[in-house]
Image (cartoon, rainbow, N blue to C red; front, side, top):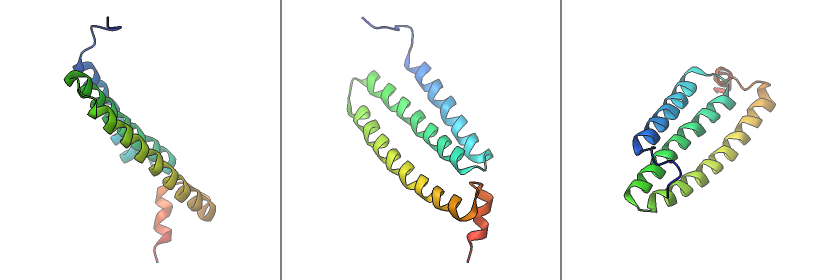
Length: 105
C-alpha cells in the first residue's frame, strides 16, 4: 500500500527542476557568500531528489547509495567553505563576494 499513489515521477522531477532553478538564480543574483552556499546546497538537494525518484522508479537502490555519497561530499564542502568564509570575515569584516577583489596580489 502506497501512501500517496497519485504522485508520479513527473511530480518529483518538477520539484527537482524548480529547486535547482531557484538555486541557480540564487547563486547568480546574490552577493552574500553564505546565501550562495545555501543555494549550492539547494541545487545538490534537487539533484538528490531526482536521483531518488529515478531509483524508486527503476527499483534499484544504487541511486540512493549515490545520494548518500553526494551528501557526504556536500557536508565536507560546507565545512571547508565555512572555514574559508570565517577567515574572510575575520580579515575583511564582510561576507560580500565583491570584497574578494581586494585579495588580489
